[in-house]
Amino acid sequence: MEEKKKREKIPRQKMPEQQPKDRIHNFNEVPLGYPPDVAKLEAERCLQCKKPACVEGCPVEIDIPAFIKLIKEGEFLSAARKIKEKNALPAVCGRVCPQEVQCESKCVLAKKDEPVAIGRLERFAADWERENGEISIPQIKEKTGKKVAVVGSGPAGLTVAADLIVLGHEVTIFEALHKPGGVLIYGIPEFRLPKKIVDAEINYLKSLGVRIEVNWVIGRIKTVDELLEEYDAVFLGLGAGLPLFLNIPGENLCGVYSANEYLTRANLMKAYLFPEYDTPISKGKRVAVIGAGNVAMDAARTALRLGAEEVHIVYRRGREEMPARKEEIHHAEEEGIIFDLLTNPVRFIGDERGWVKEMECIRMGLGEPDASGRRRPVPVKGSEFKMPFDLIIVALGTAANPLLTQNTPGLALNERGYIIADPETGKTKKERVWAGGDIVTGAATVILAMGAGRKAAISIDEYLRTQKW
Image (tube, rainbow, N blue to C red; front, side, top):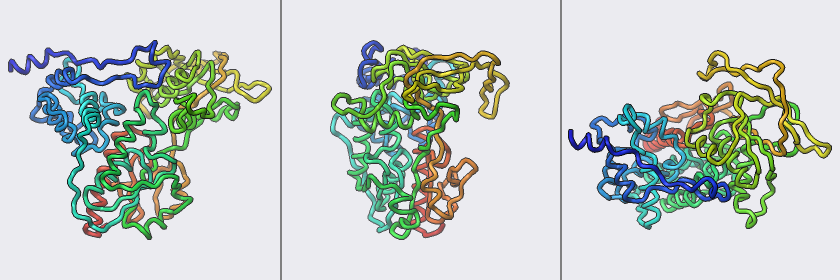
């Protein structure tokens, strides 16, 4: 009991960060990670519960108390390997997963104080393993001779590939873009998830024997049915990459981007490395980002680093309804991003050259909750006003890209165009085809996509060994 009380008195350890005045001028990672002594002190806070609720909150069911105990004891490499028993991408998840609403929200310490910093400790263990050159290759089971095609190299596809290769199956990933990683590489900025981290995780999969084919647009180069002639099973993890727009006047003006295009140019096409890479991208002096999710925060903070003098987040609801992680909102505010809440664009106005120069908006009030559980925004009559902007980024979310699904007979889709798949197995209505991640659920988190990939891998392995659909 005394030991427990002692642990409960240890405050949650802060992670050192770049100062806002410095980081707005570079794309280096903002949180700097725990030093070993701080990681061990944070690990001491874990009460090692007999029935750890934190594990229930983890979509891939990492043995959280076990890896934290290993960190406390200074067994950092063992901690990383314990995590990798369930999670092939710990350095990624430790940085971008919303632990505050998943594993950490279940921590018993959260009832009275702050939860154990599970995500930060996961990041620490993974970084220690990578930086000390001690990455271990798990034992791979005897080859089965079965071949699996994985469409998409995002979190779901990478997880399926990692699990199935260890089980002895041959795995090939097909990626439409010229570099693997999916949303991890084209959607999340360098200051939140360095490219070297994603590259290291992908190189780990390659070391296990996973083949990756880039510049492969499934649905154009080959169809799913053609893949099924060559492979024993196909997993569709192609994400939801079709950007949503406002459908208001002026949306086709020059200087109006979807967040998808803007972040792809900044990340995958390396605009963040200017002047080494002179990527075509509008920099903008006064920038508006429409939306208030994580992608909106990423776009706003990227625009600031690319040289914008003023960046606004424009959101039709209030602060309490903002879907972005609290940490991302906090970082954006520290960096000087301006929040125009209860504000909704109604049209974009261009100059004589066809470039956006203004945005007309209307004030909003909040009514009763809608289907999302958030209070419904209601326009305030007669409250229209204009603001000058020379770059506008629309970050309203994404939908399912129909390129593959329209060319794949036998796949069942829901009313929004997402693939219908069993939530426990990933099986679709088309035999020998599984699906998971955003193409099934709509835009969600990295770890939820990985959880879907894990379930699909178990189902695929069972089918390949039994031939029972």
